[in-house]
Amino acid sequence: METTRARQGELSEENDGLSDALHLAQNKLAALQTELAEAELAAEKDRDSAAREIRNLMALRDDMRNQFKSLAHDTLLAQRQDMQTAQGEQLKALLMPFRDQVNRFQSELQSRNKVLDQESAKLREYISILHQRSEAISSEAVNLTRALRGDKQRQGAWGEMVLERILEESGLEDRIHYETQPSWRDESGKLWRPDVVVRMPRRKVMVIDSKVSLNDYEISVNSEDPSDAQAALRRHVSALRSHVTALAEKGYHRMDDNSVDYVLMFIPIEGAFSDAMRADPSLASFALERGIGLTTPTTLMLTLRTVEHIWAVERRESNAAEIARRAGALYDKVAGFVESMDGVGRALDQAGRAHAQAMDRLTRGSGNVIRQVEMLRELGARTQKQIGLDHDRDKASALDDTTTQAGPEAAE
Image (cartoon, rainbow, N blue to C red; front, side):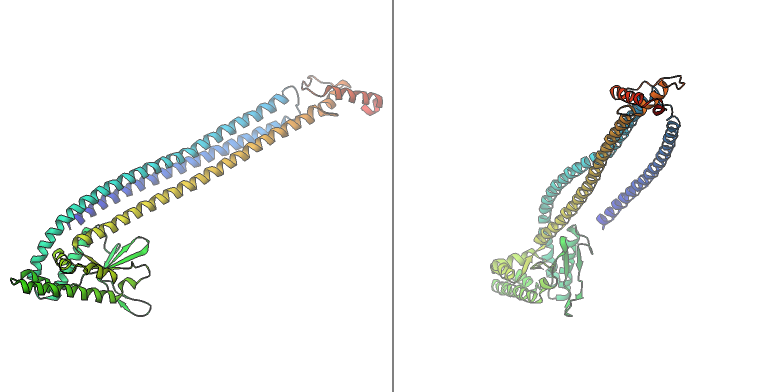
């Protein structure tokens, strides 16, 4: 109970810590949302400013003079550089959390492996401690067996108490990892009521039975006549065999599709089992052939600690799988962003080609726009400036010859 209360205090402190962490995370989320709103407002202002610049450029489209080509080129180059800078920063901001998460994943795996090694060392220590406890329990059990002489009901209650104590010290949690004396009916209407049902990962279940009579063992221990002691010991072995047969006929290992193919029969006194094995070495194989495993406080504790260790490994593997799933999802997002960046690059290249094509149509080729307006100046249009853009001189000369041959009417 003191251990349980201490554990409850630790869990309460851990819960408080998690609540504080949640509150900090919520505050951080609110701050990030505020920053996002400010960024969106700034982007809206930037879009409005860009729209005003476009309107100004459209208003000045008639002023196609000396700076037209350089202005268009500089504008496109500035926009491309700004976009590449912004996209580079966005890509960096997106990849930084991914790198941090991968680093955290590696650190967590290393820490989990370290914890696993520590738990293995603790398990070895537990085995040594449990061995010492089993000897103390055996000595105490002999005294209690003498005190409970001849009373089967009290003897059974005492055996269940020892079993419950082992379950509590194994690290398994009641009603989560095991249930004591559950009862239910299957589809055929048969009533099942085992002493203990231990639940394992992947929905596997294992049954433990503790109803073992130790009257004859008590007589064999306390009898002063060797012949009476031997006779009582033979009756003790016979009682164990009879209980094995009766337990096998109950079919606890067939009560659920996920049940393991054996049932553990708990003998609460180490000496009762060891004396029976000395008197009948085939007792263990006899039980195993019928799907029954004989256990004592020591072996049962080791079995339950192994089950608890399997649960711990299952929890670690589940967490590692979840981290890997999240890392994969983040990687897919990064891959999609890279594809979008490639599309933006192709769009910029296409815009550059379209700009070059427009400049070609404006300044080069037969009948280009610049040559047409130059002809207007040469024919006497009053101007204060002269367009300095390069254009196709040869084709322009050919156009002049054609105009001269056509006469002044055609030129007009």
